[in-house]
Image (cartoon, rainbow, N blue to C red):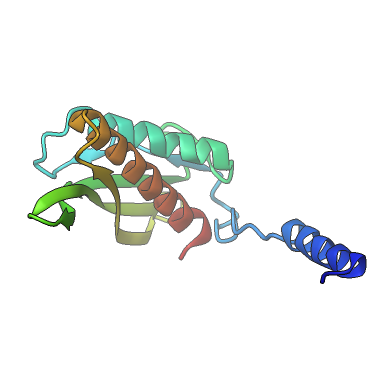
Amino acid sequence: MISNKNIFFIVMSCAIAAACSYSFTGASVPSHLNTIAIPVVDDRSGSGEPGLRETFTDELIQKFINDNSLEVADRTSADAILEVVILSVPEAPSAVTEGENVETRRITISVKAVYRDLVKRETIFDKNFSNYSDFRTDTGNYLEARNSAIEEATDKLTEDILLGVVADW
């Protein structure tokens, strides 16, 4: 049996833990970098995914705007630049049921991101990032489910890139 004292202790512990959350946002952005240029993402995947480069670019820019660590600027006035190339967008079965029926498929997006300091004229990082999302094949609208998976993978991947820039992991 839990006493009122124990309930109070549990509630207070949860409240303190929630209040003590720590954010790495801006933790590793050099002080001389205030702005970043994000040119349109290049798609070298050969996937022919319509609108992927524009969607990826827009999502990445929006992540930086929302984060507010670096102001998004034009290339000619930016302190840093983030260039991203989509390398591959494979799709493969991720769950197969009895009778070899594909229940879910996985979309994986892999990119190369190069983050450069334009003030000091040096590359801060040149990294590959990859993330995925699964989608059900039995939803009745395969294309809609697939597009949602691409959106989810893009969202996760752009978050990974943002964290790579602002937290330098």
